[in-house]
Figure (cartoon, rainbow, N blue to C red):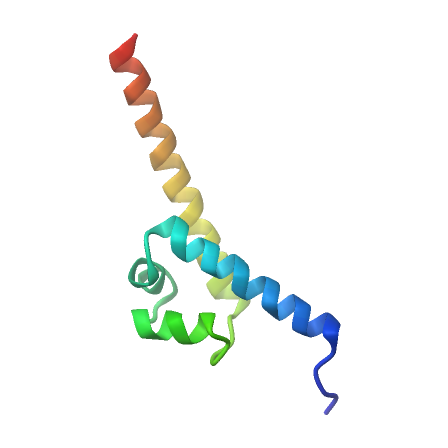
Length: 84
């Protein structure tokens, strides 16, 4: 079994950084955990690279962020409506 390379380590680090950004965007580790089906501590372990991040977890986070973006867009529209 080949050892880690800088290329696959960089890819893994990027996945962790992006998932951490998803954690912030969704409102914290507990919210992200609800999305990917783990507890807050499980999210923290994943972000510290103790546990891997699956493609399904990354995609679930992306879906949740898209839902959040739509909700925020609707809120922005409502705010604009009350000032018109």
